[in-house]
Length: 200
Image (cartoon, rainbow, N blue to C red; front, side, top):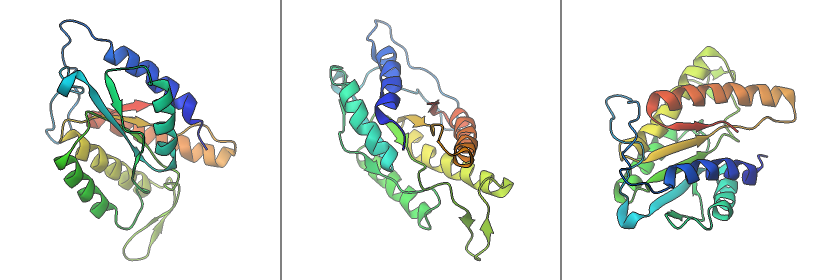
């Protein structure tokens, strides 16, 4: 299990740099995915406060707790203390979950999303015809990347800044190797889709 407070400290350092108010602050341009353009973080949030929400599985739950402690004195950040659960990217109802997320964000989107997930992603991809694609196989990597893009797109179309927290090194070498393989995908797709990858 990741050490959420260590991850939160890294995020807090980034947040401190990002949220230090400065005259003439201008929006940072992000790379685009399918024509999605715009600023990464708006320099003029509502009421001068950035609303931050964590999304994901048990990792996000730990991040929410760690960030709440690490950013307790940051008055410009309004952090939701409970994470918004998102299951494995390999769930059979992934597309329905992605659409529900888009609908939710259409009603009330935060300024910043911190995503921490992947505890259940280290599994074969079971296709509709029953065929199983092994973890790390080329087809598995391609589909995993597509699903990462799908999640990021849901946020970026609503101009939400996305920080995707990678997987930490694990005790077992086989588990760690697969986690780092997933990090490679997350790093690549975050860069391509206008999100920020946090390598822990």
